[in-house]
Length: 250
Image (cartoon, rainbow, N blue to C red; front, side, top):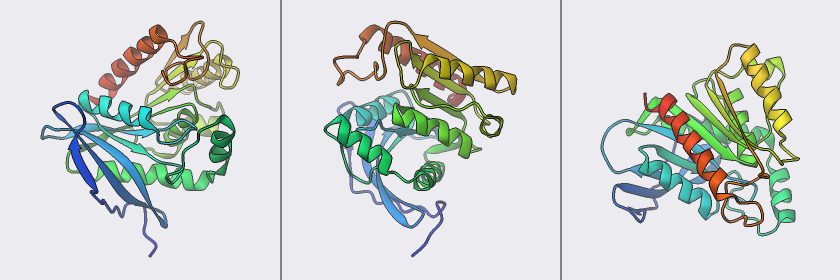
């Protein structure tokens, strides 16, 4: 049966404490276009209307590090929905990750992002006017795509993802954007990020750009020992939480 992204089906399969008091985690399902997709939801345990985040995985898929980040967002007071653009598939090698990334139909991904926003906005514990998005690598690229397709987003964080500079794309962005780029990243380059920053400023949009010296793509993930940089990752997290608290907690 075809249903719009506003028709949300929540299947609460499991709930429990996420290793620390004050946090609940739950596996959920919701309708996206003609599909029913799964996601991982982490929530503060307290009552009230919380800000929320769509959390988008790297090209590896919805792995434990992304779930860990969702739980940490919940500890900071956010309802975090870690979505699964791969429909349950995970990559073990770069070759598998590339194939999975390229297998995602762009239109389906946009529908998934809209459905995730609708799901969060419909939760009784969420302040629907304070929903943001964050992603890393491929997820950073989709975070940007979310900002250009979801006019009601309240904040967007792009961690070393693809961004654009066309007038049409930039004009479509209605929320503040934070960009974290690595100096040595040859795929999503600092030059790309700075050109996006300039385009946003020229259009009167709110943008914050950070370049992290001496590090490469994926420097924030400790599961990537060849590129992980603890000091720069800590700085990036500090900048992320400062940005999110400013635009979602107010």
